[in-house]
Image (cartoon, rainbow, N blue to C red; front, side, top):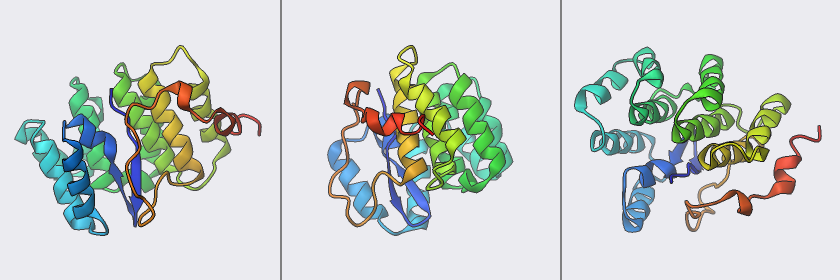
Length: 199
């Protein structure tokens, strides 16, 4: 299973889940993180290179044509393409600052049939409202985390979304190591989650 967690550096967010999703080794993760620190253009180029290893060139080229084309792929039949679309919209097109994209994250995060897509969408929803501590979004994400009938991936995505909503999970330069990617609900900070419901 893949968990999306992130490192904040400047305006961009690095998707550790993407690294796991694309099957890179721990050494590769460290190398990529070192190369991306503080370099936005290089970061975006790396994201494109990683996805080109996973998806057909025609799909990647479409995502690079325009934000609108990338958004259309949020509803592609292939869940891998939907995950890539979130990555490109967030990192390449900087869509997290757009209200309409936040609405799409919420819709897909609650309704997509694939749990990994839901995970990415729910985390991205938190990023769209980063550091706002938005009451409505907080309750929505917390309800997903608290619902044990939900897939573990969706619950993880919502959990990390809550952290973004209140504050970024990790910041440069204090980040020393990446967290485990196999975090399970039993390891969640439940007092933190419930704090979003008690308002």
